[in-house]
Image (cartoon, rainbow, N blue to C red; front, side, top):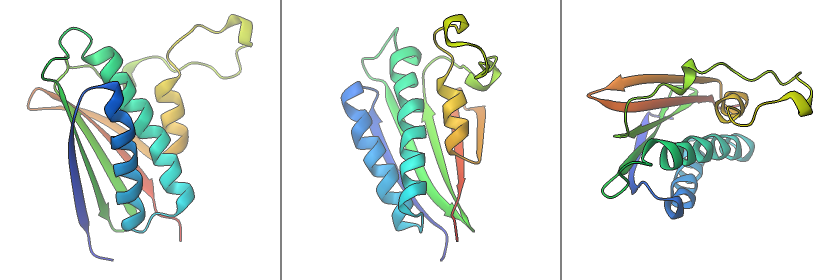
Amino acid sequence: MASSKSTLRIPAAIDQIRRAVLFVATSSQRMGMGTDGAHQVQIAVEEIITNIVEHGYRADPQSAVIDIAVEREGQQVIITITDDAPLFNPLLNTEPDPHTPLEDRKTGGWGVYFVKQYVDAVHYRAASNRNQITLIKKIAN
């Protein structure tokens, strides 16, 4: 299958997350991702976008937008999520230890940990003063 790309821009609002998640699932499946893989990227994208809306744009949500691109390169689907919130690399946070007893765990910090469980790679970069999270998921044969 040839390389292809789909893009979507949404307002950074909680009520837009479902739209983003459905866009990613539909685009991924159209690019050859199976149902299980599409479901996994849905969960990852929902977590990332929820964090952007709830934490990144907390100070100024008025004209905030999130750009989402889904493309196929070879045997993988690449999802790029870009926002204008203050620059923040969530991959630098210390990962929680899943072996810590529940009563000793701190709240928060689990989102990126779970995202990493559902995709094959997660990358962050600041590009033109924008946050850019890239999720890579291999297409199962």
